[in-house]
Structures are given as structure tokens and as C-alpha cells.
Image (cartoon, rainbow, N blue to C red):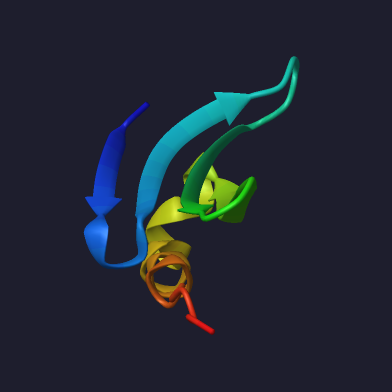
Length: 72
């Protein structure tokens, strides 16, 4: 786990972490989890290979930050 950020406005948490599957490349991931009334968990994940991260980080963070909960 590299970082966790709470976003109170939309009851969401953003996690930044790395993972590596056996014999595969290390990947950097950003995931936003939003807990909703009822039994709902909504997620959005962006990922890239660790070596590609510097060139795509800005765009992937923008995608994750664009998540907004729309109320009925």
C-alpha cells in the first residue's frame, strides 16, 4: 500500500498500491471505492506497469479524480 486518501464529499476512498503476479511485471494501481446506501460498493481502477507509470500517471489520476457520485 503506497497511499490512502479519504474523500468525504462522495464517501469514497482512493487507494494507491502495487502488485505483481508470479513472473509478471509489477503494476501500479489506483482504485477508488465508494460505499453507498444499501449494500453497494462501487469501484473504479486504473493501472499501468510500474515502468510506464511516470508517463501515464497524470492521465490515470485525472480519470480516478473524475469519479463523482451522482445523487438521485
